[in-house]
Image 1 (spheres, rainbow, N blue to C red):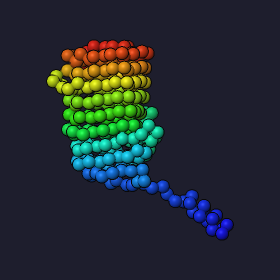
Image 2: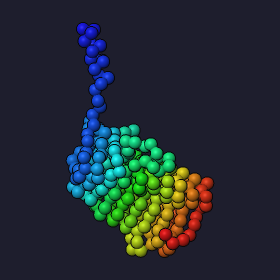
Image 3: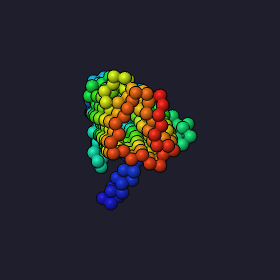
Image 4: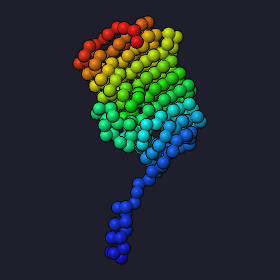
Length: 244
């Protein structure tokens, strides 16, 4: 009996953890912790609906995009987040790693992401084009830039954008775009502008910190952001005006 138990323990050391290989193409359904990590080998797209459950790791094995044209629900929990990352981070500090292409949300009507970590993209961590997005309690770090938003109606709450190689947040809503609302946030240690308000963008920012970026905030032509209880400190410069 003792020998049998020793054999079971010995063999247990060679049992691989669960994983799911995603070769590319359209994805849908439910990704759960039992199938995690999900190893992404080529570009993937959501054209219908995908639910990602708490505790799931989405791991990109080479440069691939995660494009959303349908419905994405990725709601982690405070102690059980969802992580979008890469299998190999070597070369990150001089931006020679392969990385991945970030999350691209394109003309989608229903996006909800909570308690997610997005990291090691060699593009923006997340790019949002003409979509309605709820983005709460998320962190974007170690990407070429943090967030890029174009002509979108978005609400960002309790977000942490840190240690990216470029801008933290770049907003470009167009002259008749909807307001972008950001509250209870911190944008820190980015090697670009904390928040870049592109020409004509409409930002309402409430209760946030812009710290240790190259510049705190840049205000583009006819953008006119509303800044409420914003602390801008320890940046190369606080506020710059220009056309972006």
